Length: 242
Length: 366
Ligand SMILES: Nc1ncnc2c1ncn2[C@@H]1O[C@H](COP(=O)(O)OP(=O)(O)OP(=O)(O)O)[C@@H](O)[C@H]1O
Ligand SMILES: [Mg+2]
Image (tube, each protein chain N blue to C red):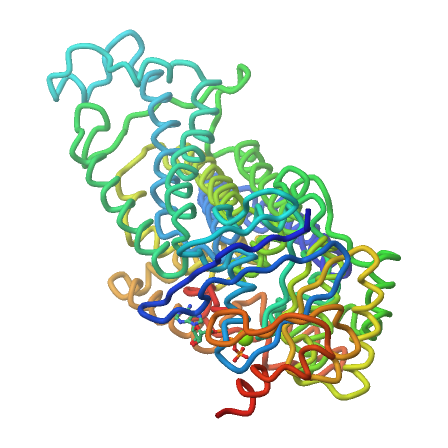
């Protein structure tokens, strides 16, 4: 059994079929890259998995549990984390506070009422070292640059420690060095996490992807290894136009 | 940072010193002045309660006066029964009520009264909150719904004359007897009783805002949508803080009825509810301590100035509110924080001065 099984997934917005009969599996510990032209439905597919959007049809099974009717927070508690395409961190909170919110092993109210937020733990410093934000720990997130904000959200997902992490364009706006660093982090995450990564940067995809799914107009156009995808005629047509 | 907690503790200690020692000495232990100040202190509690829901969680509750009123009526019912002895409360006879209504009976008990004044407002607040936050109502709609509730509730209280004394409220109350101590509202002991209640409320409020719970609420205020994807049941968090805030307002209402020796439907008026918002905004809604100080300062000013500008006071209050909104959106608290930061010669970031409007609509699309 695969960790995530998506079957015949549909969603329509008005008349637009944003996701139109998607079928795919994701195995424990792999990095699946989701490619496709703008508007192909990549972000919407992630939205359906994490609960931001309700499907109009189909099923999503995570660890053999049907999750398509669950609340967002229930899916998060089961072990699904999401990084959004537009970096979403809490600008009014400090970097440490952002991580403390993300670190939600016990998300219940009683635990929150009876504990103080962690502001500086070894685990937190380790994560911040990894993404190079160690010296920004007390800084309000609103003061970070765009690239640093991307890092912070990645750090938050590492802190959240979800089994399945959905990354929407994590390297957008990063320099080449930063992108390389992200690739290294993602490969190290593979040991304990499964990742679905939406990315446009092909060299990044080449370094991290175990498997690739190409989407076009809401459905799956091709699936396979990087070599298979790069030599696929249908993919070339979709990207380069007719 | 940790230092924020330190500043709050220092601030609370200073505040406690001024309230418990400074104020009585300043007024020469004059009974009338102490009573007036006790009134300000009870209002400080309802203001800090609003800071919890509005400042911390971004939920602007314009119905705060309703739960405040519930507390005041609970206390007044107890004292009215005491004043009436074996007879039916006088206003009931005037309204042709034959026997003591069922909901009045338990208010013979002081324990029940104290619990009711705290828990009924908390339960009502919690109930409204469940319906609002399950449906993911946010921003300005919270203000509209709570305001509508306030107006409806005040109407019901005025209508039900036989139960509530209608427009006149509950007057002619007996003094409270607490553990054999007959409370004299012009005494220093009573002032300390109200002061102690305020301090307990503030310590509780500061604990809440500095706990992980407070942090999650601030996260929810900024981006409730995002917070769900970290596994937090946002509606539950909002419901709990809303209910706590309503319970504290009820507590403040009980003290207020004691101080003024009557309960009136004017405690549940829209203008009273808006006044609470003004106190909280003037002090600074991000800090429970600042909100309490705001309530005391504005009421102190009202006490001094409304004699001078008898008719113009409300206009003055409105102008004050507009000035605060425009020139110091984070209230006195924001001014102090910015000044402190400037003294440490760090540039003050403009980003942090959050405009007032965003507080009405904290939900951001992600
Ligand atoms: N909430 C929504 N309401 C209406 N239409 C939507 C909504 N979300 C997405 N769409 C539409 O669905 C289509 C797929 O959008 P989606 O964001 O999934 O594309 P994408 O593959 O992530 O593209 P990009 O590479 O530009 O991020 C687009 O045409 C988009 O306009
Ligand atoms: Mg997208």
